[in-house]
Amino acid sequence: MTRLPAVVCVALLGSFAAGFAAGDTIRFDFENLSGNPNRSAGDKTALLLTHDGFAALIKRTSGEKFTVWDSSGETVPAPWGAKHLSPTFNYFMDDYFVMSFSHPVAAVSIEFGDFGQDQDTAEIHAYADLDGTGDHLGSAFGFMGLSDISVDPPTLVEFAAPSGQTFSSVLFRAGANPFFQSAFMDNIVIRTDHAPAPGTLAALGLAALAGGRRRR
Image (tube, rainbow, N blue to C red; front, side, top):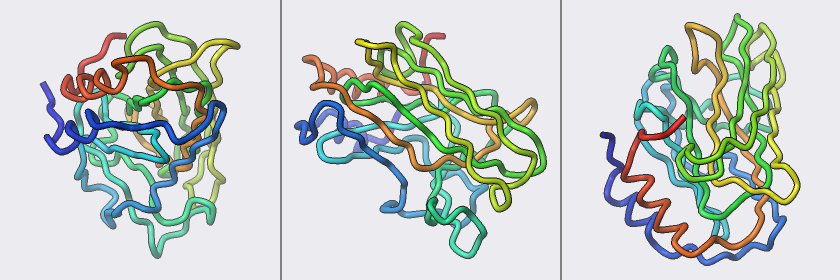
């Protein structure tokens, strides 16, 4: 069983008082994080993102490492800045990133950029509960070009819940067999819904403690 660093669990179990309104849009672009200039050296098993009372926890379903790549000096799309989510510590792993939310959300979009010379499929799968569990609400897909992110523009994939529904987590990745995790990710945009039900924040902490466990 994969366990998160204690400091992450403590942060998750803390109070995230909602400072946003229903329907607000929250964007995570990784620019305020410390980046790793070696995109192939995984140094994280969990990443906690926060914005104005909203929290999102990113892991990999296998517990495999990942990194926030600092692309300074490289050619990437200008809107991407210099920091990007990267799974390249092990891109052969047949797993997913899983992102759990402290508050119910109505829509999520992610920009995917290819590592290079193959054609990948980007995918997002939404789940009712934390950690990629509960009812599967639906999926969204995007198809990426043959060239590297330095040549092809990012591929935007968005999933919006059916009217009146929300979800608490998504699984996402881009790649093609045998390179299942062969894309960078950036500009994750979340459209929020309403305040969390009682116990949701504590449950997020428990999901973190559960590590890579999930139900498919």
